[in-house]
Amino acid sequence: MWPFRSSKKRIPFPSFTNTLSGTKELFVPRTLGKATLYSCGPTVYGPVQIGNLRSFVLADLAARTLALAGYKVKRVMNITDVGHMVGDVDEGEDKMAVGAKREQTTPEAIAERYSTLFLEDIQKLGIDTSLLTFPKATTYIKEDVEMIRKLERKGFTYRTSEGIYFDTSKFPSYGKLGNLDKAELRAGARVAMGEKRSPSDFVLWRNAKENDLQKWESPWGPGNPGWSIECSVMSSALLGEQIDMHTGGEDLASIHHNNEIAQSEAASGKHPFVRYWLHGAFLTIGGEKLSKSAGNSFTLADVTARGIHPLALRYLFLGAHYRSPLSFSWEALQGAEDALKRLWKIARTVKKESGEKEANTVSHLVLKTALFDDIGTPQALALLWSTLQDSTLDAREKWAWIGMADSVFGLSLTHPPEAPEALPLADLPEDVQGVAKEREEARKNKDFAKSDELRIHLKERGYLVEDGPSGATYTRI
Image 1 (cartoon, helix red, strand yellow):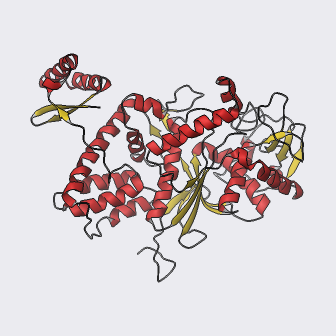
Image 2 (cartoon, one colour):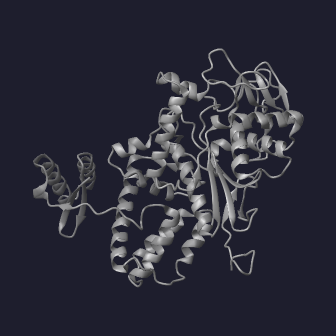
Image 3 (cartoon, rainbow, N blue to C red):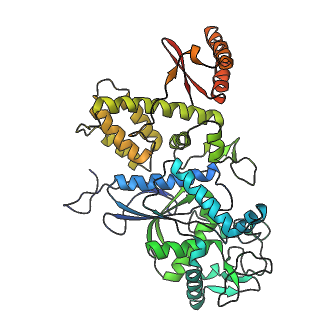
């Protein structure tokens, strides 16, 4: 039986792997029936690559899982339009300046362009933005200054010729997220020392340089905020000084999120800043993390340019647990799209046969159990497939499963796209017919490698192939 807080309102408790403790914990929010969720958003200096999109899908899955459990979720995802250095710590050039110089425009124009593109991308990925707040870092400069002054008054900062730094020696538990070993942060290894007292110290406010494209007045002179301060300020302003859950990619845990903890808890004097930390694993290709710097990244535009539906990428993400590295390939993505389209086909049939009416059933509670076990999407997907293929269940029972599953999956299963009209071979353009006939001959000869190769070629030409008992049919993409 699920634990509950009140005899009047039972609320199931999902469990999540909390990076802070390293263990799976039952979710118990600060306020009954409500949950606050902050997610690190993009730095809008260019298109977001699909590796980062995985972390935004994780945030969406966490929010949907909490909503399925009966919680009213309040969400914030920041837009970083200043302060994020190329080196992801304190050295290098601000990414917004890099983007502005690359496109010969202003940081403001870059931020507007890629913030809009980001919102379009995540909506195509089925991420629910209706209840999300997207604050921009540059609109909270005053609040940044106020928090830094508070830290200064409490003795947590020191000043150098480069700016104002947080003194991690004054915060003994620095590095508690992921058990970071401060001794590993050696000068010359991961961070440049400059005038810092310790490699783990981090910048709160940078003094402006002559060629800076963004700078603001402050008690310390003109300058700009550090990368980490924005998240502490915006989460505090919009969700309160203590929040229930914080999500992000695993690369943010060791530095960025430990910085957030230190400055937030030092400023407020309250513990903890965040109750549950969720970090998603990397999307990899050839064993390497996808990243712009490595030159192996792809964007959602690259996906759609190949005629692949954006939700196929979400389906690919759902097929692996969020804490497990996921290897990306175009073949894997194509397989995900094929599976999703089969799922849509089944959903269309069930929708029609059920009249969109659900049967009262407790069988779908096993699906909820899988999702409440640390967002177990691979197990939940498998359960959905086996249920929809179960001939002993009627359409209304299956429709109930589809509704519950899609409330978290976000795959448009309750509103599947209309099936494209199937075309016979004779209706295809003459040049496409030639490829299709060659493929059919390869299948007849059991040359399935060539058949698959020609199938991909047909898709690149704009035609999907579906093999059935009566032969192949073709649909225009």
